[in-house]
Structure formats: structure tokens, C-alpha cells
Amino acid sequence: MDHRPLGRTDLRIAPLVFGGNVFGWTADEATSFRLLDAFVDHGFDAIDTADVYSAWVPGHRGGESEAIIGRWLAANPGKRDKVSIFTKVGSDLGEGRKGLSARWIAQAADDSLRRLQTDRIDLYFSHWPDAEAPYEETLGAYEALRAAGKIRHVGASNLDAAQLEAALGVSAAKGLPRYDVLQPEYNLYDRAGFEGPLRDLVLREAIGVVTYFSLASGFLSGKYRSEADLAGSRRGDAVKKYLNARGQRILSALDEVAADHGARPAEVALAWLMASPGVTAPIASATSTEQLASLARAAELRLSTEQKARLDAAGDTASQDGNRP
Image (tube, rainbow, N blue to C red; front, side, top):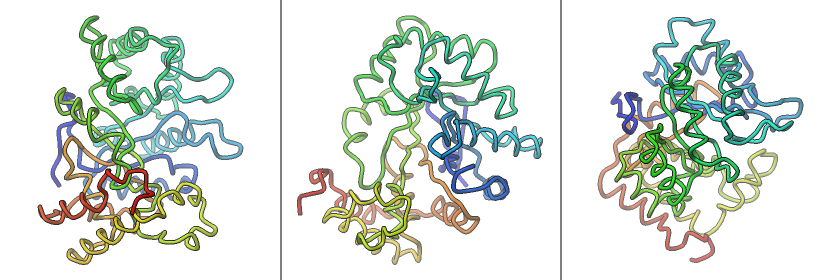
């Protein structure tokens, strides 16, 4: 499996990152351990989580995913050096635990390290913009963590082009760590937020990109093709917005290309991301070893120029609003 440089960092990763939001939510601890073992066995080596995963579950406070990863690392001490751990700070955990102030970043990083049972975070993300915390304060907090050996690199999620450019400007002017990796929402349907000025900026600045919602909440798996398919699904509300003419065109193109390869639509959708300009690796989750095997097949799938163009055209952002024919 090929490994790709992650921006200007010294990290090189396989072209798919495991999304750890499922740990402690839709995958219990025993299942999570099996998934992590299989993930590494398939040759993958980057795991993405966040301090907020999975605070949305009744009775959870956040940190559940990190804690499961930490217990897996403790049970498999030889695997820490085989994986890169990504986590995030900045989401609202309640009780004042939120944002990108220097005070909270210092505490949150220590909390994450304790849950992860490791001495360093390989890539630490600002999860959301924080209008109340100046970039200089946030980046200065990361500088202190890096100097202490607690984090190696920093990235940002959910920034637009203007915000990322401003942050990069502060890094350059003040000699502070810069956001070397971006984590945007991007997939074959949701394209307008990344394509254009933001993608131009990451390409120009050699910033690594790991995408989230890479399968559009499961829509690009082809499992949901009508509202009837949403019955009983916890993803129903998130997927409903894709059930329009543009979404159907995308599914048809995925079906065609999948048939060419004897593959699944989700595998083609991930392969499209891996072949997209600026993208280092999509983030994707699995809740079974069968799904994980499918992710491994996606990493080996190579689209022809014609197939890539066919998929590009089906999801043309000229009809990004989803209501045009």
C-alpha cells in the first residue's frame, strides 16, 4: 500500500484514515479492539478521533473514543509506534470545556493524553473556529505543547479559505506553528466548501488534507436510495438531503464505475477522494471487519481518467443546491 506525505509534516500515512467517532458509540469496546487490530493488519496507520466523541450519546461526556483507543494501545504496546494518532480540541463539551483559549488547550491536551494512554499526540486539530480566541493565542498554546513534546504537529478542521489564510499569516509573522493539515467536509456530493479558494490555498501552501463525511453520512454507499430506505436508520435526517436528482445522478455513476471494477459504490467514492487534487486521505469508519475489508479494497482501487471524469460530471457543483435537474 502506498504511503503519502501529510503536508509538510514528517508523517507519511496510508491513503485512508480510520474515523474513531464510532468507538464507544456504534462499536462497543470489544468490537473497536477487533477493528483497530484489523485496521493495522491491513497496512493502515492513522486513527482520527476527538475529545468530543461521543458526547452526543446519552450518558456520555466526551472522551469515550479516546479512552477506548488508549486501552487498545495499552493492551498492544508494540502498536503505538505503528500508528499516528490524530485528535481534536475546541468542541463544546459543556461546563465551560470548549474553545481554543490557551488555558483550555493546555488542559484538554493533558486530558486527551491521559485518555489515550500515550506521551504524545501526532496531530492535534483545532476542531472548530473560535472567534473569541485570537490565532496568536491558540497557536502559541500549540507551540508550548510542542516544546513540551506533548504534540508533534497541528491542523485545523472546518476553516474556510479566509480563516486558514489568516492563521497562516499569523504563524509566519510570529514564528508560531502553522496549520499543516486541514480536515474539511468533502465528498462526491459535498464539494463546494472545499473546491475553489480553499483547495487552491492548500495546494499552494502544501497543506495535507484528510476529509471527513467522506461517504456523505453513508449516502454514497448506495444503501439509501429513497426515503423508504431511511426508515429506522439513525442517519435518516443526515441522509435525506441527498435524495434529489443530483444525488441520484451520483449514485448512478457510482454504480456504473463499481460494476466496471466489481467493487462497491462506497469503495469507488473513497477511491475518487484518494484521486482528487489536494486530498491526502479520506477519513472513513467501519463497524465490522467486513466493512474494514471494503475500506482496504478502496485503497487499492485505481480509477481511469475517464471514470474519474464521469464521477466528476455526475456531481458537478453547478447544481450544488441539489434542486436543479
